[in-house]
Image (tube, rainbow, N blue to C red; front, top):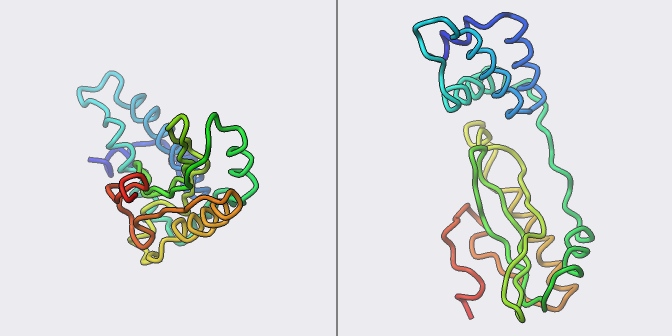
Length: 183
């Protein structure tokens, strides 16, 4: 079904979507696709594809254009930025923890400040080094976001004299044991 909708789009819209894909701007590509297919479907008996179908269509364009995509690299997470956030927290720092999380683009690692008095946790940084399309390209493992989170988290923990915990540095696992459960 997606191929039919892609072929039905005006050349200018297909060029715009491909431009977003080549610039690794997936969300913008999906939004343009969704609006365009909605316009095409107006007055027709065929309902337009839903958001997930539009996403699949854009991901198919990622596969077609894979060798030409300019991957956008997230800003480097230096120790200074999350260290500044630690100073603003409303409690005493107990540990720095790295946690896997995921969304529709794939896996990423979040660095979290674990607090005592009062207990709580606060996100310090989210590190993503590519979508999970890279799995099909054979680019991982190792997981570069895990390596960066380990380096940054270890440095932060050392700076503040607290433990660093990353239960699953070698592979994504959002069910790995948390720092408080290992005490």
